[in-house]
Image 1 (spheres, rainbow, N blue to C red):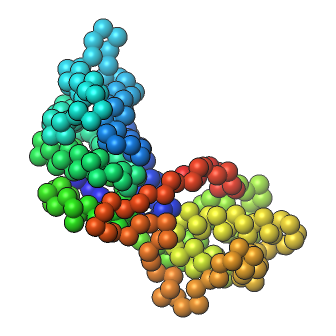
Image 2 (cartoon, rainbow, N blue to C red):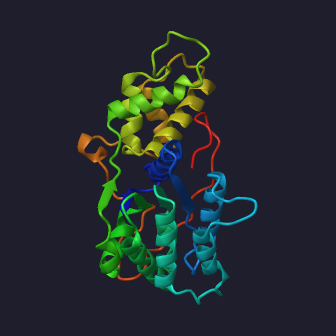
Image 3 (cartoon, helix red, strand yellow):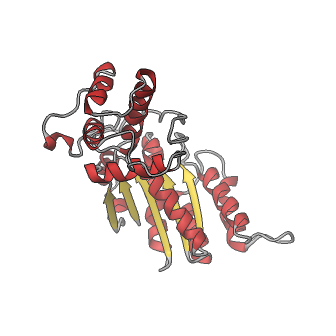
Amino acid sequence: MVAVTGPQGAGKTQRLLLAAAEAREHHALPVYLDVATQSDWAYRDLVAAFDKAARNAGLVKRLGTPGWLRNLSAISKAKAGAHDPKDAGRRIGEALNATIPSFLLLNDLQNLAEASAIEALGKTLEEVSGVIKPGVLVMFGCYASYLAWLTATQPAFASRINRTIPLAAFTDDEARLVLAKKLLAKRIVEELEPTYPFDREAVQELNRAARGNPRRLFELADAALEHGVATRAYQIDADAVRTVLAARGRAPASDPDEARPQADPSEPSPEASPPSVRAAPGPRRSLWGRSR
């Protein structure tokens, strides 16, 4: 059982989607679910995700449904609030065992904010952890503060997490590489500098202002490109980036140490009660394509 933590836009969803893609490439069964904000811990959504994954993998035949899937479907038939979390966890674990190698990937776990839903979640995943065999991966993404809160309130569940992967902020070199990769797909003129029209200092300013956060980096780079087009600039330098940042009311960090990972204002802090949840913004169309 693996937890992937980081602030909004750090790349948690991308890591889970990458795990799903690698699972399919190696003929494993990836069951992926975007956890919704609801009270009954999305049991029905989870069964639907198992069914979709099984059909995509060709495990459901026209004349019959696998026994593990029929056994799992019993979860979705229970009335809201009447689920037995441990029974659900056992059925989920048995379904994962029956399809080894298999991945259970839960995205945005912090969307669960009701105490009853979180308690059910803890008991369910604790039971899953006790049932699964080698060849099964359970991975979920959430805010670091949410995981800290779960650890304090659901110690039995937290003790079953084998590894936590905190997503670090981009270094300036990593920011250059990822911008170069995104820009490459848009090139119509060859033999340009990889990050053109951004120069090295501009990328450093963008990354410092984004504090190494991938989503913010792309948003600020997009704004800088729009500024460059509007001013007919041949190249976007550090001064142009500072102009854009000033217009957006965001000043770059003056101290390199300030560019290190810090608490995200959109990420709730651990408290004695469930962290509040802010709905994630909808997808936005930019130079880089649709981002989550």
